[in-house]
Length: 143
Image 1 (cartoon, rainbow, N blue to C red):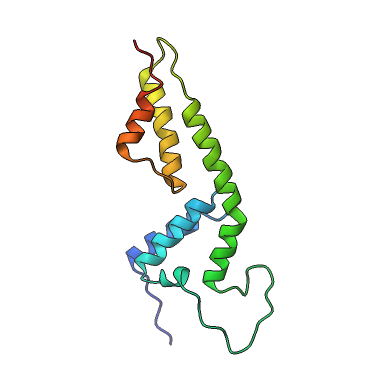
Image 2: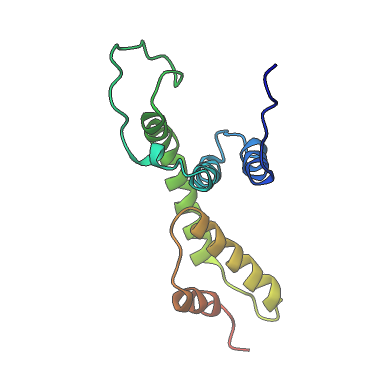
């Protein structure tokens, strides 16, 4: 009789994160970040960073089924990279176009600007803290 497979609580948490965030056309960056975190925790993140040796025989490649892990991630980056660039551009444009009207709500304005900053950080383009503060404060009215 085969002993049951045991999965630690730690592994279950990582798997639940990856299971919750399935890859689709709008979440590649979040999915990729979660994949990197999960693989790093399991000390298997090397598969994303290095080419694997060629197999002794070539398998036909269709879709992503027979790609190596490295090639698969590179292909996904190529597929979704343009989308991330567009999202970054749109976020940057909205951030720099923000102006708070006279007698507007400062808290609402700051939270909206902070959400744009967080989005840029998620996309891999964080502002340094001092610059982020200046950008948030600049569109406030003198009052």
